[in-house]
Image (cartoon, rainbow, N blue to C red):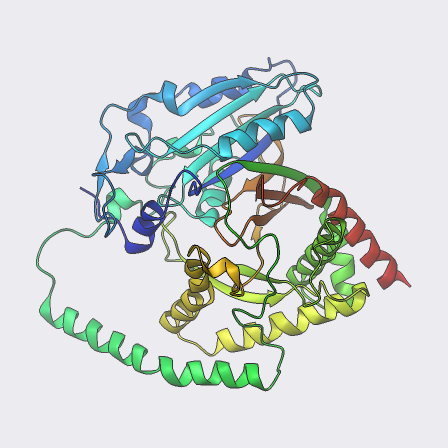
Length: 461
């Protein structure tokens, strides 16, 4: 049976009713001319169970124990009616009602007795489009893998009719699936084991000096944002199990124009816009802290040899400038912070980078302690992920992909998660939050627009 890595096992270990550990994605499609509204659903369900890829047949072998799981089992009797479901949007069938549906699905647990994924096709939208909401456990794929699978299931050719859904892609597409790449249970080569052990020990020995270097840079005020620089806010306490999901599309050129005018990266511009939106949101709730809020930004550690699936992500922390009223000062503060983080990370080996990332997010474990919320600072305030997507229009068997909106994972101490995908000249934001700890999170969509417009006005002047 396939092996399960420690990170993947950890996502199963920490999952509870209040903490569903699956990533989601909402896609909007326009069906081809002359085809019925059921077109997308028919394409998704026209797959025999034996065509499902090995990764999407995996389920936890045993109940998760105190030490997690070490092996997967393979479901040989896959029930596609359970995994692929049909729904309709209630009246008046706006996007608001669609987001309500996806909010409920994002807040419900996946069945661990079955492979850990679901696909919901949603019809009846007032504009005639069709939506598809997919949720997959983080133990199976991370957000980058999920986007890659979505891309590989679509085609830039509007006339192509041989597209397969992500869960049915052949092995040639889903490179290095768990089922095909897992190590066997044979005895490892002693020489290789010794060499790897010595390399690992050498990496560990270098952690101390590098940690001192990071601490020194922080003390010298070089702009490096470190864990626990964040103030405590209403977003950094215990969360419940209910979720709220909202989404919006923006023109990518608007972000690029601001980034160019300020001579910063596109990601810096995104963080500054999010910082301005959070400043407005927290201000409306009379909860804006005097100290700047910070964000943890996942960093893709994959290279060309990395497999699709599993988890290969690092983490850096950046300021959001929420304490600054001037939008230009805010984007400059963000740029200084991210530049310092990139400079530090660029001097580390892959293992050191992974360990530093672990240190950056380790504080989330403290946030889960009941007494920590009484006085301890959070390691950061929000999670903001920027995932690059296709640069050209994509189609699924002729249905045009209008937008793809990520739904991610809030946890104790981190009640809001902002993820965005750049696709075909647009930026698709998906915001997932605890319904109780982040009230009226739909207001963030309006604040993002206002924050971006404020930056445009300031840079134009």
